[in-house]
Image (cartoon, rainbow, N blue to C red; front, top):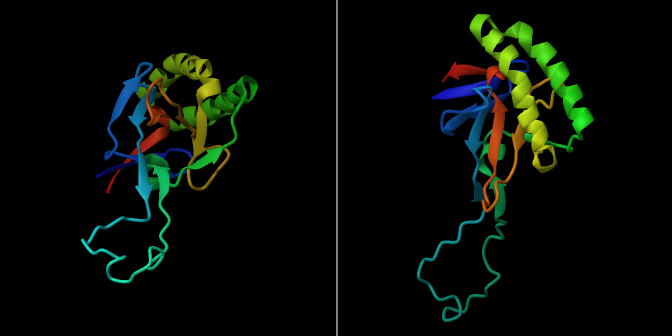
Length: 168
């Protein structure tokens, strides 16, 4: 299994269990999230509680919770929304911190394509949800989620050069 960590913080943000599609010349990865139910499991064992003198409120009081699989699996922490100015400020700092950590062709491709990827994200800024890794480090990568028209499940966008592949 492959796990992808934030190159700056070491937070686990993604794994190969979630296939990705490259967008914006490979600078961004789009990964489809899915709403899942955690917690209570309704098991029908064929018994009729009313015929057996049982009450409906007997038993364990489980609470089902709906979560997005990627957010739950990697313990992503949602952040307040950014306006355009805040987002540009964040991206400038992120690019400044990330660029020296990249090598050779990866660094050149990142420098060449990050501006277009940033513009792509800016076009969606009002629709984006922002997440950071578990450590909630200020200088770490942001993970972006949004909803496509007609879809109940959010795709997530990752800045691919900011991820380090680790074999588990």
